[in-house]
Image (cartoon, rainbow, N blue to C red; front, side, top):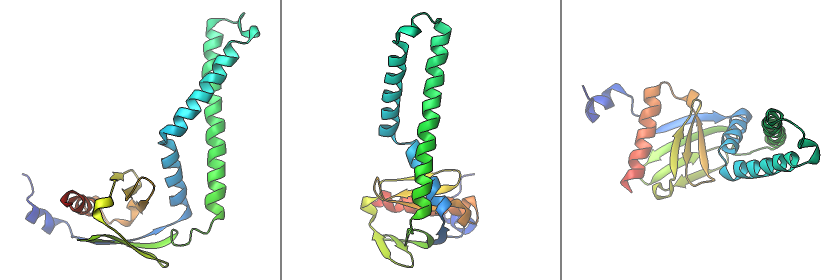
Length: 181
């Protein structure tokens, strides 16, 4: 049986606000999530790494090596470069995230869904984001990412929702407002 909006509304408590707290690990996970999906960075890494592999394979001492060794060399070099680049990137991100104050970003947040937009409140600001500017919404295993623009995102930890139904109701209400404009 398909639930009608009225029966669904009685099953799920309607929530137009959510209060949550962001910590440094939430910010760090966001940076890692964002870096892992950065197509420009991945493309640049692949171009540089493949050029280095090609350059290494063209060396005179590689001419006498077997094809199996060359394949192993290429795979090992790509994996090693990936580990080095990821390790250095993660190390710099950890240093930046752990050393900055992130005032207004760390700590308590409140998101309120209103007809004119999404209001975010922290201890240092109150912002209204109009529905016409919203870009996309992504749900991962731990977070609800609400993109206002490509670079402005609300990171809402899923741990602050009482249930999956509450998360779905919150997300559906945001999407309903976005589609309405």
